Length: 276
Image (tube, rainbow, N blue to C red; front, side, top):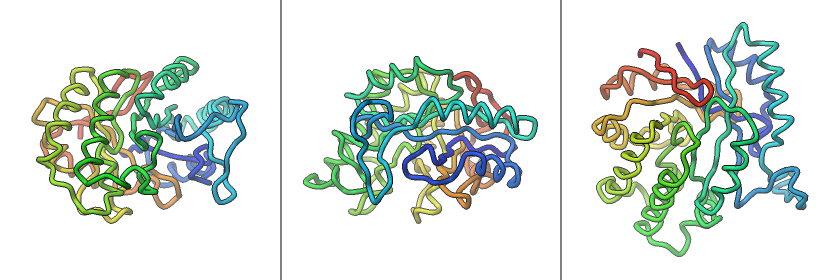
């Protein structure tokens, strides 16, 4: 059973992949189930219906998902293709502590199957532009990143899994920061995640970013397993056809080698376990 639980479409402002094309491609690739998880990043983006002027970058709008159209299109996909592909409703919450109230309100507006909790920015500063890292030492920006994540999982509970937990490594121009230096933060985060019945995402995008380790790292996955973590989802973080469903079979073999015996899909925010 191959699934992809981190899928972006043209409803995300960094993708032009039409939702119906994603569904058709997923069926052609032999996937059994997908979950749409388009971007919401309060703090650096506004909603389409916020009444504020929408900003543009390189001619493209910078905004969160158009929620009513998104939900309507997912429902249409489920009606049209549901006999060939399980299609689940989700979003990727790019959260910061000061944006928790906005996400809490959004979560109450719609029915979701799976919510990815991600940290894409801290202090409204992006990682991919180096705005967050600039002016900080490698130790400072790594520790600040995990401090924000720890505060989030302690305060916010309406999510399913932590997505690409060590995302900061993707944009760390100083090289790999030693795991033992951030282990205390990671361990507290994982203990909270496990206690709350949440999980981790295994994100296969490390291949296309040329990273030397998995996402999250093998160290994090081993620690999660040793602490009793069992909930794992698989996601490609796809934005283009060539990303969709990539390396899903390999992902299953990697986590099996670490001692995991199952992975999860989600229905109405509840994990459904599948044997590896």
